[in-house]
Length: 185
Image 1 (cartoon, rainbow, N blue to C red):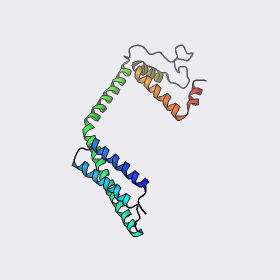
Image 2: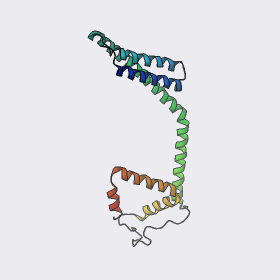
Image 3: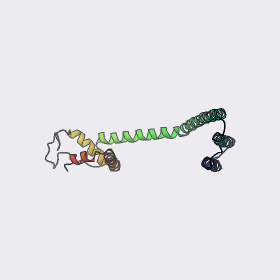
Image 4: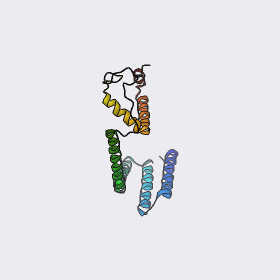
């Protein structure tokens, strides 16, 4: 039995894709060598699809499996090498980001603790019928409400993005009806 046109067409498409990839992204001798190995594996697998005897097909299948296993192991090593290189290249950036984030959070905490937020936050009980001890909601402690109000007034953009994030999470999770119940609709 000859190799079918469908199998030949699939092999050609795959080999053409490999060639295009290495023309665009190939950088060194190892890439050229790997390109040849990949093309050879496709041709070998295609060869196993013709009218070989049962014993020959088993041998061809075993050879192809061996080739795929070797290719998988080489790819695994390459990926680990790239991950290690990325870690080494970006480690300084991650440390800098971690430091800036820590300093930013420390600054926010200092502002909250010192009370220099650019104005007095509105107390939760003012104009809401609540009490100075508990605010408009019986279970809300006024100290926590004041801290939240201060963070919002000091960092409106962060507050807005946080609000948008929670709305998106509520929509995605399918709990929008719970949000409507909370606001009394």
